[in-house]
Image (cartoon, rainbow, N blue to C red; front, side, top):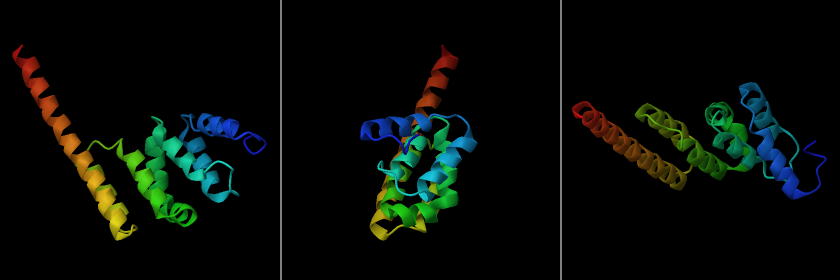
Length: 145
């Protein structure tokens, strides 16, 4: 159905609609199709980004990227990995997840991209620390009141 649509706006709407599934198997197949099929008129990296932006898809996209980073990188370039890291980074809530992503991206990106990713992950780490301190203050306040 997607390939038969002629208007770019309709293709974009379908790409977003197909990424709304809550079934991990379907989302994985959709992303696999994005990196293996002949090119869409709609940018295929956006499909992975759109999947990553959904509540269920963010975890699926992270695992997909870890397992298929080489194919994604070969097809779209390392800059797409940085963009995907920014989207996936929104879901990170622990220092362990940050460390995992730093190690993962550290091995495959060029120096300037590594610095960008490291800075973004450090920002996320700082935000997580602020949230942790905020929760501790709220918990203390609730216990005293």
